Image (cartoon, rainbow, N blue to C red; front, side, top):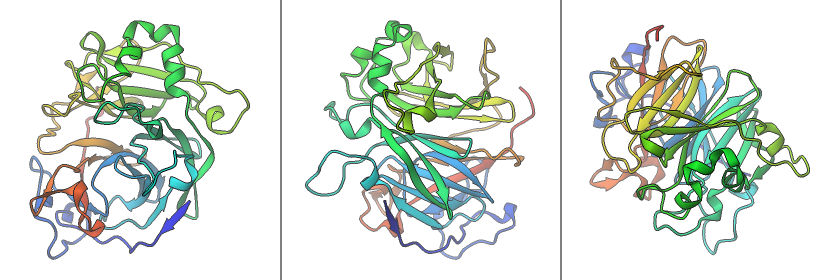
Length: 343
């Protein structure tokens, strides 16, 4: 594990509603989205999964590197702490920098933060062993540190599970993640039993319905229990209008779901779902146009939730954010929204 030097977060344009002043020269893109004020977080572009740490802080993964960064959810700005987990993730040897794991989802469960990679191939459809990782961290002195070892057999377990056979995951696994019917996992959240995790697929979307699979023993997979393999529950399919799952969170007695196209097409939508036989309900009051939300910050003691946008393809001075060489110029956006108590 390699700690990275950082400076303290400062804020951003558009946060007067949260009691923080505007920073001179803040990026113009921060002005507003669908009439809502926007926070800007600096140092990375592709926010893909986040976990609340307490004290208004969250830790977030980036699907373009293996660094976890801690931010102040109200102030934005630069990370207050960062750690590169590449040395701890048992990655394949590389001539230059370590291969990216493609972190796509995260959730808190007890004292641990769990992280899930896409488990798909790379964009060219070639196998990418570095993307087969399920691992956990715990925060020590506000620094995320790996717990146990990364688990690398989750895809094999899913392909072998008889209850998942009808979804054709063996065929999906052979395709690029954004090809029609390709395999790409992007959602994960703790379940209300306090022991299990619900995993959501962005793709495939069998019969036009999003696929979710309970993982019943997440802790044993990372705590190096000899012979431990994933125990998978009965799958669930949800009608999200033909969209897959970009992010999941359990908050105040219901699941929050960000849905999106399997290849980035169209506008994402926000749904709530009570679980079980209940149908998911679209949150029509939240317009996600102009955002590419892929992560939540959902503290139970807050009246609002923070949507975090994957802005890797957003242009900064004519260059895609994720292709910028200077990390100080990279940024992603966050928008606070308030949800009704029902549904």
